[in-house]
Image (cartoon, rainbow over all chains, first blue to last red; front, side, top):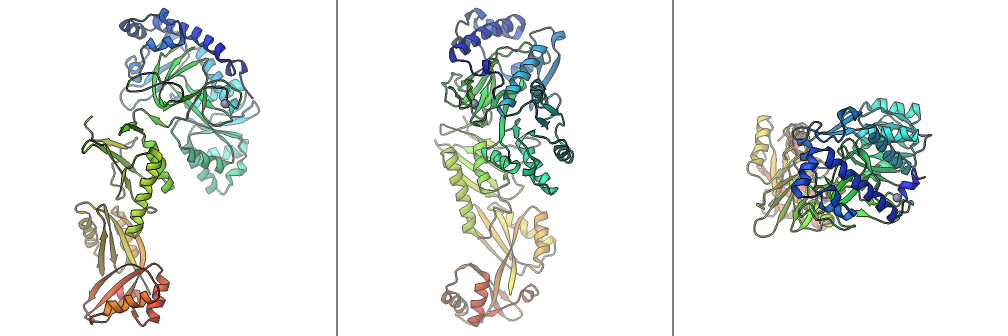
Length: 432
Length: 143
Ligand SMILES: [Zn+2]
């Protein structure tokens, strides 16, 4: 089933024509209504009229999260505040959050793109969707909610937590679709099993994933536990929220609703636009947002784009599952390495993710990487040769994951630093 | 017949061994025997103590990674070649030894060797059949 065949199966020509028309309007609106854009455009000497082809977007300045933060609270609104009917914020690790303002039209778009996604998951107006994403300033809960409403499905806005209640409602209400973060999903599965209920009998039809990074192994595990396919949801509050990219039945990448969002991939160092198929930082321009239009927003998410007609029939471009953040990306001997790749290797050794830290040095001319891994009950053996074997095995797994040899050191439990919230995973001692 | 042994994971970092021994001393643990195996990165401290489970908990409470394993204790005759005889028995029975360590027993004026073959049960059987004096766990803990 395709929600909006006209929009999702356009020919490349029609799509580009529509995108250009919308881009020109979006740029004009941003320039005329948001002082920030006017200032940036003027500094670069570009005018909205300079956009004659889609490629001309490359003449425009990038917008970063910091730029949005500087405009806190309402500096990025392109319409009078009165026309904004809802706001969401995205928290940063430091300082003020960024604010996204939605007009009625924006909420309509949000519901539309998310409904397309639910349709990709096989959801219909007959389904009961249990939405465990949080309802609040964060966009997680509302995106799915608006999509479900648009579609006409029954939505249970249960939000996160209250696991016992979640399980009770799943059974009593006959939930057919679950929306959760992968880690909450795994936790839920465990709790369900703990109560002596076979997760497979819950009878789910589909699962929607989002809001955090996960590995393919995690997806397999969740699919197995719930005996239902799990689909990826991608989005950012700044852009609109969940619904920017959604996975179809092929489960090989996420379709971006290109009639509303224009994606580019750039090299985050040189800022050059990269061709399709190359990995880099995703940059998004909103083509139809009214409240807070974004021009070339740097997402810091690393992915690649694939074009062509998909097995599901859609022609919308596909992005890969996000596997890293440019913030976390390390260039080691010229190779891009992400902590998530190291994590993936570690997960192959042990079921629970061990604490680890990556230390990058450059003792001579070559980069050296040491991965310190906290030994755990399951990693520790009474014999030296087995411990050395485990260490070598981790080194081999990391090698096959990143293509580089690293040195693995086993360290005592609870000796690696833990910070509140995000763990310090990488220590770069190189003087670059 | 099997003697419980504690194995403690130690990072090869200054002061870690000392820290472990301090914890044991403060906890009033009487160490019967001790050995250390190490590489350039890490080491394993192996201990025989009177109350292995209690001591394991004590160490874990102090953030050490501890495993309880088993070894065989054999009394060595107090004359040259005593250890060779024991190893000979295992060798003849095709039993692979992973490691061993020994300590002197003051009362009897002899020495006791602690052995960790690949298979503990096979090891015990072979040693007993070969005439070695395998010591009971309680006798070791109580020394
Ligand atoms: Zn598709």
